[in-house]
Length: 273
Image 1 (spheres, helix red, strand yellow):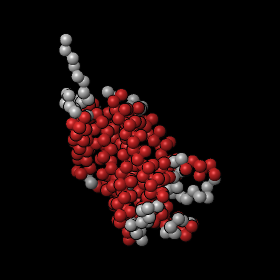
Image 2 (cartoon, one colour):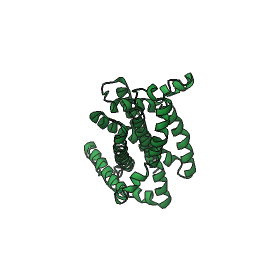
Image 3 (cartoon, one colour):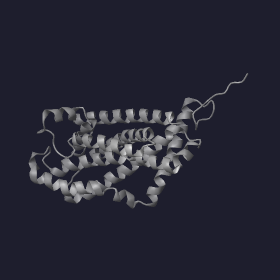
Image 4 (cartoon, helix red, strand yellow):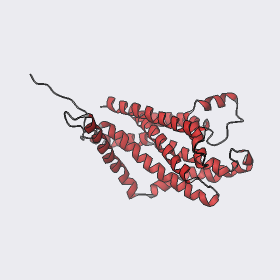
């Protein structure tokens, strides 16, 4: 009688856990390189995707300055608004991971990736990392663009803010990936769910307007919205308030989102085999 040992793709038979983890890391970097290749060949696509946040800054920012001005936390409109726009970039940019996966499933590229010896989880992690690289590059561009207009980020706080955006982006990317796998035969449903979820999260995070003067029910929803804590943490970090309470809660919210997203995403990937 003989026995057969089953292992996940990408890991050699009988490989110890450490070797398996190294395999996932290596495979994730391979997927990352594959996903980054089109962007490196067309870097202007990264700039082009910034049109929406730039419109928000150009059109919504002056309205805030004229109508709210000194009533905003921190006094300065750009110090309050730019960090929130960076969270918006992370939110909407990372949520398109699922759309890219749907396109690959329609063209057969995803199925071709599944028959490779790459670890299944690396397909998710590699794609999420690609979005992180892109969103960090976009965030840097936005910060540089806003410097001549009076935006003054704290150097260390800005660096930590980018780390926070990356952690949040991992979670959102993984959840988007799982959603795409769930609706693979009805790709229109992906956009319905995405828009239905993202816009309330954005509005109820205080990203565009302070919620202090809003009705009680809106403030209650904001308190259970993890994005609210990330937005407040970004504002504190870019203002140089590194030890402020909102920073801790922002990282907690982002880490919880990342862990939940990765668990859901990896399980969805394995069930889809």
